[in-house]
Amino acid sequence: MKKLILIVVFVLMFGWAVYEFVGDADTEIVEENGVNDSEIETSGEEGASVASDIAVSGSTEEEGLDFGDMAPDVKLKTMDGEEVQLSDFRGERVMLNFWGTWCPPCRAEMPDMEKFHQNTDIKIIAVNLIETETSLDDVHQFIDDYGLTFSVYTDEGNAAAEAYRIQPIPTSYLINSDGTIHNKAFGALNYELMIQEFEKMK
Image (cartoon, rainbow, N blue to C red; front, side):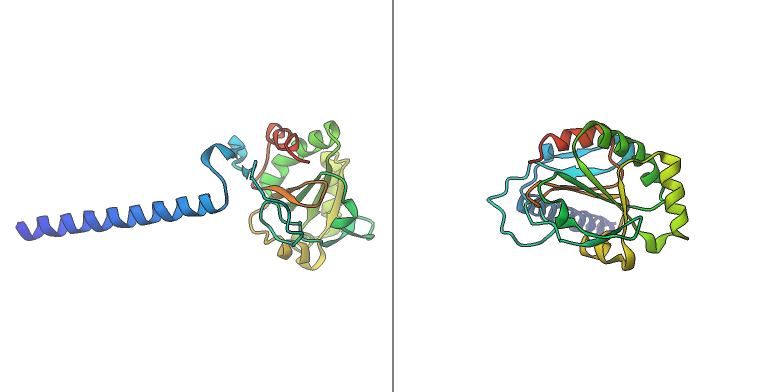
């Protein structure tokens, strides 16, 4: 009986030590990124998280995916096949959104993105992951079905998705007019959160 009690106590102590270690590691990561609990917001039903209001001591002018970094300059194609670069939109506040027609959260997000486009001067760059689509016709049909008036681009060869390390979709990067990353969101955003973050951009 004593042996059993000693084993249970040992297991509990070990479990508590692991819990403390993991908790401390998480806290360190958050503190290193300069984010606290009040600066992380969730969009509710869509489940997207956005970290914003990050204190950045000046841009290093180096490309990266952290807050304050210059957004990687990628090449995209318009639906008409014309090639553009992200840097072509320097001087405008940009929402760089990666999506697919087959993705339910992307479908849920699109009406809010259209409203966001209509009510602000944001430049929406909606990047379709064309390599995951059955055909380009599906993308055209999607644009018609949802009545999208913002520009849709394709990422042939997944070069842009790789540069931005896209895994879950939709994923959005909000980019300031100087080309630096304001914040990023994994999952669908709602209109209220889009507006809230837009007002903080420069």
